[in-house]
Length: 507
Image (cartoon, rainbow, N blue to C red; front, side, top):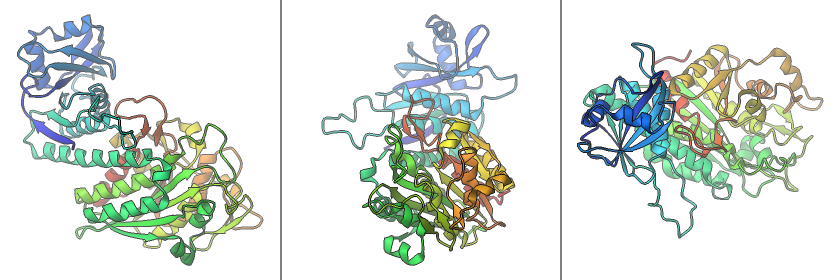
């Protein structure tokens, strides 16, 4: 069980297993980060020699640099961890929340084996409190559900008790920020667990059953379409993608209602629980991480749960388009034509462009309920990774709403970039035998996917498409508060968007 508290105790007296302080980088070497009176108390306990000690140990205060120091007499915790925050801010400026979030995450990761950690980072306001709390909680993530019987979960376990040292700990805004951070971080961690679960243990039916079992406990209603209901309803995208697998597809509708709400937001998540590419089989080396192709559905599911737990004054529907894309004698073949929900037909020229097919079904169905805005989230295209790298999502959609999503993502520390949908790409939608083709040429593939999805959303509806193919799964080394494996990317953006919607801010 994870615990998070605020405390106005000094860093020198807090009863923890380790204390984390922030240091910044200056021309003269590391300096204690301004704005943290609790950390200054530790320096006082050393007789003002802390920065000299850090310099001797080679510390510079560079961003995310970790230096461990045994604490002197007069400090309750046995270990001091100095984490670099980067350059000293301009006079009068505070550290950016994302700097604090990353620093807290890096410190948490460095403190495996320590149960209780106190963070004495600069928390000038409620946003800084939230950033430190989120970073600490997310940096301490570890996935152990599939370890064997000889695995000792206590050995090298990440911290589970977190104290944010804050002189204004009794302030209501600071308390609420910490409580929100705990909920959001727990739901990001839930999304990471789903993404990291092996595909044999998270099939479309299994994901749907998990939602049915868990979501009602948070006041979220769940409706599931099984393969028979999908057939009856004409959901040809989900059925076509799932045709080659022994694990049939599902469509899940989550509904959170708040009596004080005046706005409704629909969230649609791509949930390909495993993607082999189908008949258009992925090349060797591209299959091993394809359990992550349901990251969009994981983000939508956990964002709805977070909104319900926070009691946001917004109505939310979450749509999980769940299927497994496999090759077999019954699989959809290149050249086949599928009739998606709502009646549009699509010639499938590449079965590995399957996400847009299941999203097409779900977008039409979600739009029928006339929400004030709809956002789809998907690990959709390798082209987006080529364009923006592995840490930045692409944002497309109706102009004002697209820009609002970009601004919202930036606010919570999830890198994004707004992208256009050039009119000439619509030529690629043409098919000689169907209403649409599911792929065009190689160039602009990420943009074309957006152009394709636009066909399934009413022209007068606010709509945004988040392509998280790069940041959804980290196949490299951990960094900041981001672990190796599933990241839970986009959960924080969606929760913040729900808050803005509750406030009437939809662009």
